Length: 352
Image 1 (spheres, rainbow, N blue to C red):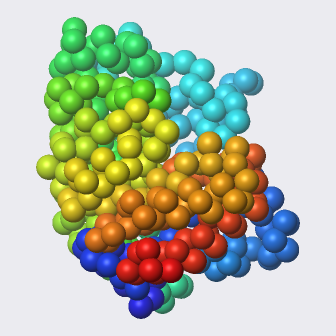
Image 2: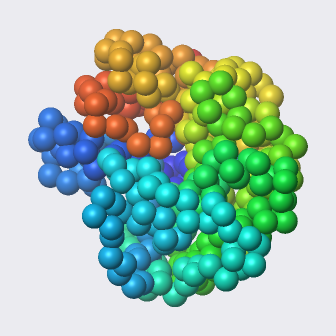
């Protein structure tokens, strides 16, 4: 079984030869890992840990915008940001906008994204790996950046039509960008991978009623777009969002990443029992308490336990509970996690 076949078996809730492996690494962690392991490039690192996925992306080719002196980046929606990585928004340009002003806002053009190389990049892997593709489409985060989080919640109560207009324009853009990507390369992409963090440390950031009213229609729109092109759809979602999972399943979502067991409501045994036959879980090995704060022995034990709970019956991809391995994560702990997946991840689980 190659990696691609293994991943598709997991999505079908079948037991492949072994549990598929996933690794998302920040550039800072990757640089550190290559140095520590004396490896030459990202591909050699992925081969060392047995990652079953590869990822391809379109490129921004739109207009360049001058940044204000304090800004370190700017989103396609015109929000300037400051700080490490993507940073934090320096302002909320639509905080005081009317519906008419939202309609008249300078929304980005899908043609700003160059999709011409995506298919070729994917085919380099000769269909041996599961290929992730599509635009990340973080429409929830973009709405927060444009309005401000508290303001967005107030508007849901006071001016729901304005919120609908805002999400409509944002998701119109992401749907058009992804349609362009898929028209170019859908036959070479296996998993449409999108990301929106609907959970916090103790539970969801908004309850099922508001989620289903304002966010689920747009999430369903993206899910259906991926399915129209024959792809599985996987959502990255941080935090404790268990009350929202039934609605995600009903909307047709195929996989959830990265499953943070340290957050409220995200007990692994409960998730597996309640939803394990309906949706694939990806992650579940605690990035903070285990991978960052633990040692290789602790990591090995926790990884084996996660496999024991999550792997039976398929529907599981093993990896860290965060989309990125952060720079402060010890390399030896990451190696210990993937070595433990290798050691204990063969089916039937528990026989090794």
